[in-house]
Image (tube, rainbow, N blue to C red):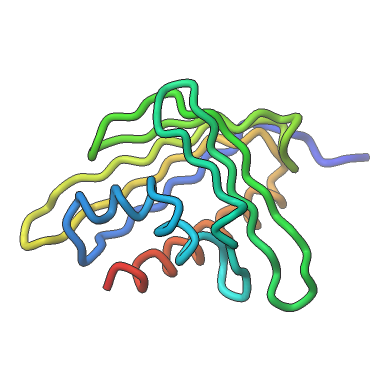
Length: 149
C-alpha cells in the first residue's frame, strides 16, 4: 500500500550575517540565486532561472547534480512580493514531485547587520518525501548563509 499524501509542514529559521536588503537580493536576483540555490553538490546555471518578481509572476529554478547531471526543477508562481520583507509562492502539483506546495519566506532585520529568515512550507506529500525535502532545504539555506557571509 502506498504511503498517504498529507499536508506536511516544514519551518526552517536562520539568522544570517547580512542586512535584510542583501538577503532579499539573494532570493530575488537570478545572478544571486545561481550562486547558492540547491544542496551541496548541485549547481544552478543562471540561464535556468526565471524570477518575475510580481504577484502572478513565474519563479523557476533548475539545479543540476554535479555528480551525474540529474536535474531538479522548482516551478512556482509568486503570490505576494513585499520588498524586502516577504515572499509567498505556490508550486503547482503538475510541475513537481509533490502534490502542491505553498512557501512563505519572511526576512526580519534583527540589528547589527543581521537578518532572521523564516521559511515555512506546506507541501502535500508523504512523510518520507517531507523528510527529504526538509534536509534539502536546510542544506540549501546553509549554502545561502555561506554565500552571504
